[in-house]
Length: 223
Image (tube, rainbow, N blue to C red; front, top):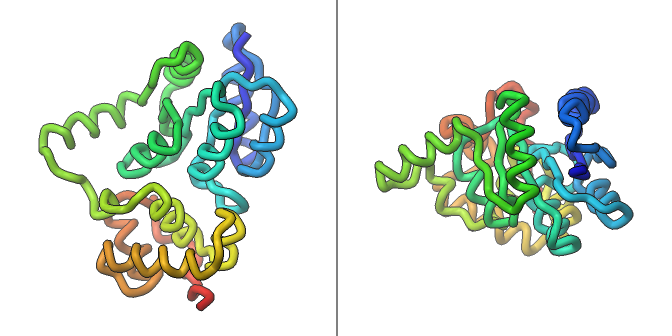
C-alpha cells in the first residue's frame, strides 16, 4: 500500500484528490496538509511514501521551500509537484528542490495514479502536456522565458512577491533576514529588467507564470 500525503490549501481539492487516490485500491491517504509547515509536521509523525505538493499556496511556506525542507528531513520520501501551470521555469525549480514528479491539476485521474506508482518506484514522471512543451523548447535550443535566469532561491522569492507578500513575511517563511530578502529582490528586478512589483506581475502574466491579473495589487516591499 502506497502511503500518501496531500498538500493543498483548498479543502475541496484535497477531498477530490483523496477520492481518486483511495479508489485505486493500492494507495492510502495517511494525512492532509493545508500548507508547507503542516506538511513537514505530518512527515515527522507519519511514514509517508509519496507527497502530492501544491506549489502555489498563498499562506505560509511555499511549495518549493516545503519540498526542499521535507526531503532534507525525509530523504526517502518522493515528491510530486502539483500546479495549475505547466510553464517553465517552475518545473525546473521543483526538480532542483528535489521533486521527481510534476503534474498539472488538469491532468486525467489515471495519469495521476500512474505518476504516483512510477514515483513510488523511484522513477521520474512529468505529465504529457509539460513533457511536450519541454521537448519543443529543447528543439528550439533557447530558454522560454526571462525567468530562466533566476536561481532556485530567487524563483522562490519571486513567487512570494507575486503572492503579494512583504519582505518580512518572505524572510519568516524562508528563515532569512529581511536584508537578505531585499538583496534577492534587487537581484531579481535587475535580472528581469523590472522596477516594481507591478512590473514583475505583468511580466509573469505575459510568460505564463500566473494565470490572470485578477488578484490584489502588489503591495510595496518593506524597506
